Length: 385
Image (cartoon, helix red, strand yellow):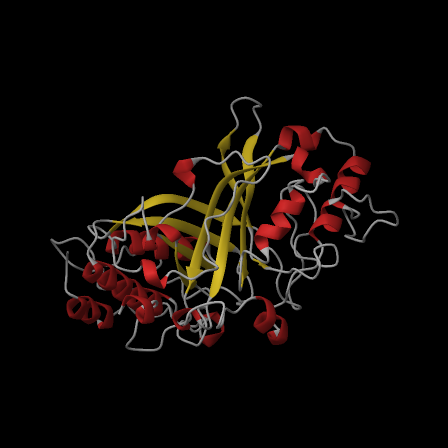
C-alpha cells in the first residue's frame, strides 16, 4: 500500500528548497485549499485545466481512506507552492516529481468528486457506501445525439486541477497519479485551456468557435446565486454532502471542418450572438444556442459552468485539429438542472439546439464533490470515515 498515512504526512511536512513556495509569489498566487467548500468550484476560473478520472483498485475501504488522506495533504501543500516531499534524494527516486519547482502556487486548485461507481459497481457495493449514495448522484440518461465512448467516460473519483500556469497544473496531476500507485489508476485524462468566464472582473474569453464564453454564467461574487443553485444541502442531499456540489463533466467534440465552412451569418444565427461584439442578435432564432440554454427558456434552471477548450491531435477523417470543449458544470441537483437543460438542447421536445450540427458529446461523467476539508481532516471524511 506504500507509506503509511503518518509517513506520508511527514514527507509532506519536509521543508527545503524543493518544498518551499517560490520567492516573490506572495499570497496573491494562493487559493486557500481548506474551507467550507472545496476550492475550484466557485473560485474565479484559472487559465488551465488538468482533469483526471480514476478507478480505485480493489475493495478495501481502508485503502480508499488512505488515498483520500494522502491526496488531501498533497493538494493542500501544492496549493501554497510546496512540493509533496524531497526532490534531492540521491540514489532513490525523488518524492516530488519536481517540474513545478520555482513556479509558485499559480492559483492552483484541486477538487475531488466521487462517481456513482464508487458506491455501486456492477451491482457490487465494494466499499460499503451504497446506502450513502446521494439521490442527486444519478447515472446520466442517454441524450439524443450522444456518441459516448466508454474509455473516456465515468470513473470512481474525478480530480479537477486548475491553475494559471499549465506546468503547475500538470505537476499537480502528475504527483497525484504517482501517489495513487497501488491504490487507484487513471481511467482517462484531459488537458484544457481557455477558461469559461465566471467572475465580474474577468475579460470574457473566446472558445474555439470564436465566440465569447461565459456571457450569462453565474459569477463567483454572487453568493446568493451560489447558495440557491450550486451548493448541496439537506433534505435533497445527505449531511455528508452539505456544502458540496455535483459536477457533470462532458467531453464535447467540435467539427471545425464544418464550422469553418459556415458563413458568419450562419455561425451567428447558430449561437444567437454577434461573433465579435458578443451582443445578442436583434432577431434571435428559436433554435439558437443561447435561447435553448438560457435560464428564461429553461424555467429558471441554471448551472455554474467551468469549461475549458482542448486539442487532441488530428481528426484523420477531415485533416483538421481534433478539438472540443471539456464542459464542466456544478449544481445542487443534476436531475433538476443539467439533465433537464440537456434534454431540451438535444431536442427531446422536438426543437433541438442548432449548435448540435457542429458538436458531438463523446465523453460523460458525474461526480458528487463533498464540502471542503479542514486541517487534520481529508476530503470525503464524513462519507468514508
